[in-house]
Amino acid sequence: MKLKNQTIFISGASRGIGRACAIALAKEGARIGVHYHKNIDAARETLSVLAGDGHKVFQADLRQEAEVETMIKQVFSEWETIDVLVNSAGIYTEHPIEKVEAREWMTQWKNILSVNVLGMAHLCYHFGRKMMKQHSGRIINIGSRGAFRGEAESPAYGASKAAVHALSQSLAKKLGQYGISVTAVAPGFVETDMGADVLETERGDALRAESPFGRVAQPDEVAHLVAFLADTQSGFLSGGIVDINGASYLRM
Image (cartoon, rainbow, N blue to C red; front, side, top):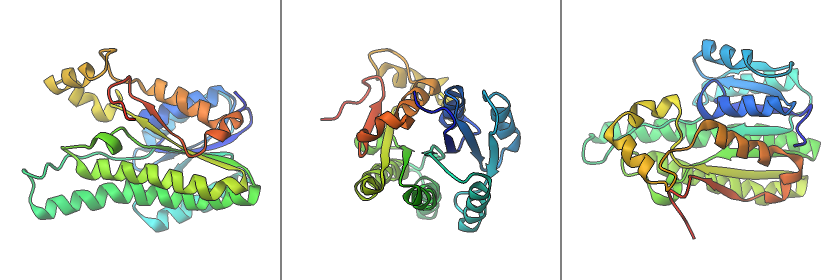
């Protein structure tokens, strides 16, 4: 893969899929910007296991526009060129319509969309504009199979990931003229710390049974796909939404 000496910013890189992406891309020789929200210890731990050097940690609550703007200034003052943006930060909370009051319903919608959609869009704007000036770059957004099959217990999450896919394709149409590739990755359930509790219940058994492999995805598997999309030779996949769910959900 052609990632050596590339500069890659990864949102939500202190844990889960983002952390796995940071590790995988660093192994390929990339310089990593590790973004985190609150857990500085987790971010530093991620930083400590990355191969190579030149990696940096950046903090921002993606729901707060001022914090994002401040972080962007720090990133761009640190690095003149950004080759790849990986938007991995995201949240999931359940709010089944039959169990929550209207206020809680709307609170969950606002919170999930503010991170999964608006926060991502904010990063796409700044890094996209940077890449337009460079006339090169790749943006990879982490979506979900939930955008296609629906999320009964967290409809805001399903809707947010549908927006991620649409955002990715809209940007792919716009930014291709600047030599920028934009893709989305649509995982099924991934065995991260965020989903660990669910996997230990009967629901976990049902989730594993959805795939003919009898298991859910590992973060490293998603990271491997992200590394492929980050490669300069994968640019013509722009506009693609790549499923990685172990045949647990198939779309036509």
